[in-house]
Image (cartoon, rainbow over all chains, first blue to last red; front, top):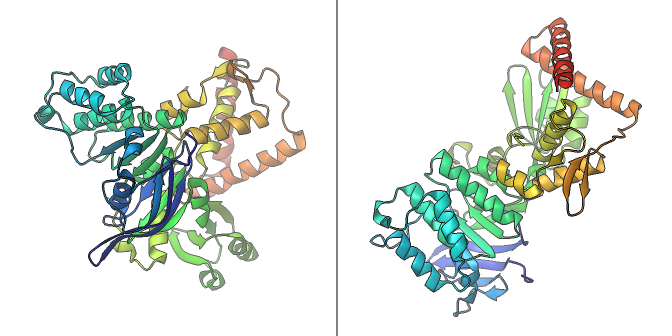
Length: 304
Length: 131
């Protein structure tokens, strides 16, 4: 594994007059769990499908595991595990037949690992795919994706509609793979899950990436200052540049600030606050503020 | 180990892990010389990014709270040399100030804070000697 797992330059996809993805330049380092976030229709799935070789880009380039995604041999797909909430199994097959199909399809198929995963999920080879619950089908998808010994893991909404137990299993598998050096790209609406497991994040909006960085740096983009003033919020702070929003709960004000909050903190100190603290915003707040800056009304931003 | 973190907290997750490990050591739940889970084990157990655990472990090692023995694992340091007493006192003062501010906003009287603290000290010194 010498090449960067994912490297795109100006990647884009146009369907007729609709620009689904535009000008995405992204590098994902090895062993990283990178979250792909955005509202429905933001271009997340189209982006992933281009990396998978399912959708052909109209502009730019993408190297996946060192191979150009336009390469018709599709060789990199042998080293790539893919899980989507869209069902791709042959419904009339048994679990055993699906496993056999996997063994014949993927060169590095690991039968021992496959059996171990089936056992831990309590999936029997005699079960027919059609009769499996949603959670079991996702488990089976993870069994096949992991048994091929992937170097890269692409997950499109892997936890949507899962119960808490299966969700936890799935997240643990993702973390376990990352600890072993597998790179993961995960598109999801579940920002609180992502906050735990991702070390990088890319926010998609109308086909473009509006912010991408490590999760730590992303949280530095927008800061929250919690403060209390004996005389209420001074106008000087309300009108200060960099202040995006001021929220009030009782006597406590939350000042949402863009980038470096130092000058706002200094301004606050000049008004003798009884209380002043700088805080992280969570991913959901972060996303909403970034979208808001892009001109979206807060009420229109619906994630789930 | 059953560390808990809250990604929604204003404290970054790696700092929560650091605080949690320190608390367990202070309470003698983690004795000097005892082995900590590997980065991988803890990451899977807590379902959080391995890099977050690695960062917390690095910081704990830098502070001399834990030590990594190559090929053997990560252990709670036997003898600890803490930061200078003056620096510790300043940190403590800052922490306690936050507690008082919080109490003020929640409408808790300072006398009650003081009583609560005494209770906690009793409880902790009890649990530390019971082992």
